[in-house]
Length: 552
Image (tube, rainbow, N blue to C red; front, side, top):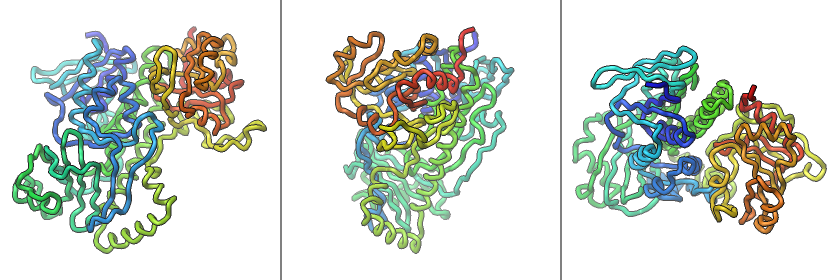
């Protein structure tokens, strides 16, 4: 068997998402999974706008969306049912509703089905990764099957095989954090007996619980088990009925799909890479479920890693580019773990602490700015890359990015927003082009790099050598313009992708910042921002940050 580009261990959502993204880049991939089929027991229920943008990048929006409910509102309530916090973020800055309820096993099946589009991607069930040997050029993986063992050779291996990852053990890295002993029972019921949409987090000192309305008429409950309640009791119908009697009129008349006991973990690997072996998803980090970020954090890993592997495998970037996967993703994953652990402690308050919490929540809700902080989900750590494939907006230093713009010309010294957009995701509004009509922005930009200028021809500000470098790297040149200017711009700037700003959202974005051009990565994070006249030297800095390998 010829070496494949990437061997992925684990056919969970992260491994399947990574395989779809790499398949779209034309890379050869083999996914090995120890189980004989996908997991079908109750799992994740929350999908955010960042992840849905990645689903869009995979080309699976229609397949995945039918298993989702958008605009999922979450309410934290106390033991008397009083609402302490409402989480209902408004707007769609990344092109999709901020929160969705979803059925993970069904969505995972759609991710698996998406791989059928690629002749160069194979999935092997009943194949367990049991050995790795990295010689610096290739990795030889040993996998165990019912028929014995076999070897698969790959240029890179990504361990996505969960919390008990063999790849992580082989790397010899620490799995730092905590695994609280608290157990939770998950119960999924068909033909939702309540019929109420959205989510309730019950911070009840007597027994914390969760009640969630899900797609396809499914209701989920989660209950914290006490120390004196053995796991085996969950199979007792009388025990289940006792848990549910305060939550449903008739617990005996439920169509139970399944139930499962799990423990929350808050752990992160001390490194996500060793040589040609990398970690992603639960193999790299485990987090409690309170804010629905386990599935989403893994999808962020896949989106960050896929284009970097593709760049290296294409020969466009040096192998050192893969080091930025660790530096960019690990800090944010740790921040999400910490936030989820804090949310869990709020849920599990005792009676005395719960009474104090309720009083404090009531006082805070009386302050509109504080209430909005929770309603709009501003407490959620936003991925912002301070190092990695970024360029500082003031100094043009590759590999680092300050939060503020330290310099500006006279008209922009007092720009409304002095913070730098570098390291943040670029928004995705609806736009219009001559070829595609009205679409979301990413559908115009494609799956690779873009240099986009507002109302300007970006090629005008690149020298001949710089234009050649941009072309060699596959960078698309884009002009954002008001829709009223689009027809003229299409004639004036041949060879440039012209995007009409039909709702004025792009104009407002550029207007609020001291920048006229942006360099957008394939995962739609801003790698660099500058005035249009600075596009040439900024391009060189971007390519340095991306470890561009110049021909010859």
